[in-house]
Length: 199
Length: 251
Image (cartoon, rainbow over all chains, first blue to last red; front, side):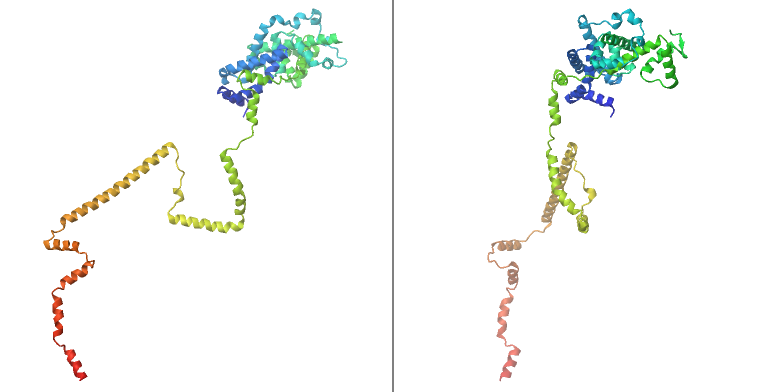
């Protein structure tokens, strides 16, 4: 049985009141949803609360899921993204939402990346890895605007294809690609700046 | 920029191929032209380098492990059933049902018997037994085709009940008809018998009053010889010829 068929069967059983099927759904998707929430919100506590909220909403609205209209994964991701956007709006005052374009100096912007990153010596990622690369990248990701952040998270962290991302974000595929490109570039510039400060 | 051409590729074409290049979808000559354009174009080269670096950084992020209690919290907040209870149900050792226990018991008994029975030396015995059974069944009129599974459904039981009831009623009606016919025949026989004479009635009365216990035919025979018996008693008054001859010889 294919994965989609298994998921659809689980959904049907869950709607019929099967608690074991619901736990199976939670076990299948909690890791993915938690990672999206964590990478978007930047906080483990917020991610835990948001993940729980996603599943509560999913549990209440599972009967509205139409198998014919799209994959369950896309439906779940859309729900997660909508809750993240709501959460972002509520906590807007407490967050630093400026993108790198707003904070980076014109001088840095005018410089080419290959001029900013010297080719000699070890690669910058190797150096940053020595001081907890993952945490640095994670913090840099929080500096991106939410539109760019969600786009790169779905593409580079969740490996979703462009069409599914466009469905989740409800924007054209070209816009998705543009956001992904801009998000990657901003992240690279931000990390380049961190790298130069460390050096 | 879109109009500029480097190494046989315009910047617009480079942009169009940018995502294919980052997703490692470009191959062969197209990839070579793309790389050559990135090296030569002062705009497209840095753009590609930034996108590639950003993608590389993002891909370096490992998936984080959710908190251990997350699933339990979600289940408690939604279905209200903590996960460990479901796991307990799943991990509970399988309790064999009554049927399964019976089957196990039967297997433990039949397995050694079956292993003995399967030996070749018993083949002829079982063949003869089967033959005898077949003959006995055919003599008794039992046909294997007549044996069928009982229909225990509600409709089947109802049908069986009505069929049996109809058979019983039919049998009862047949018996009743036979008894009625017999009684009618007896009545007709009584009506058609001739009227008895007074003598017969008297004889019948005497017969009823007779308590001697002698058999009836002998009495009738004696009654018929009433007149002959005195004659027989007077016969010895005349001397028989045989008796004279016997006296002469003696003299």
